[in-house]
Image 1 (tube, rainbow, N blue to C red):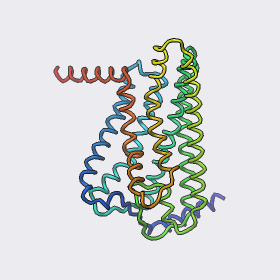
Image 2: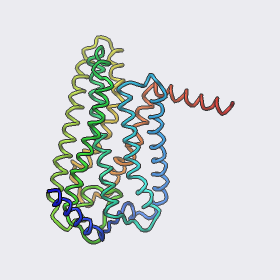
Image 3: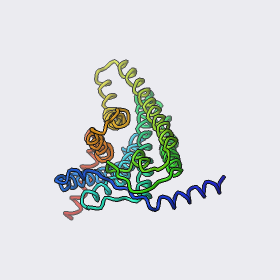
Image 4: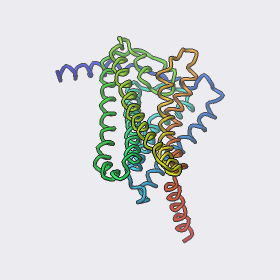
Length: 323
């Protein structure tokens, strides 16, 4: 069995050596290439600085060494990595004439993008469970959300994401590929790669559909169940002040969930015709480039502890420079 699988992948490596993929991106709008490059470069810069800054802030302030911020630091790491998988190639294609990408490069981009997207999907679910315990069982919060449990949840997110990506890549590499193919997007998605296949991609497409559906339904089930219990618990609180404080602790997370899952559902659950490719590209930009930038902004602008830590760090740096 092992020799059979190895021979299959050796054969596929030989077949894919001559495959050329061309990412069309936004090439149909030549006048917008320079403005889009500057826009996406600015967004990418804010994304990297914002997410790495969030990790630094969490590490710098002992008050932020809690389960919620432990998950948030991993969310920032995932967002930074995901953006770095997609955006540099997008920026390159906006300034060069040759928009080709090797088959191996395209598959690797899809592989790593898939890892980080699936990880983020379940990290948001783990953060919903964390908020559920914090609001519904505050006295047991530190006992239930132990460092061991938090580490196990995060490790499970990464491991399941790796399993999903390996399964998708395995079924992709069982296909045969040939010739030059145009990809009407700026990122290598599964549908774009199978479009270059010369053999029937049915099994590969179905495997993606099954895993993607499971991931979306299971993560949303955890999130919705957690917030249902949170809502019931909060509404039973006697004082309006208590209800406001409880809801405010969940507001940033709810905002991140609505943006992330709302975009996923729009992209993959709403049927799209060829006439709406521009809309799909714009949604893909929001999903792959903008969301990783928004998460640190959402959590920092709505959080007093984060803003206070940032002010202290800036003040400390200014004092050092004066000295």
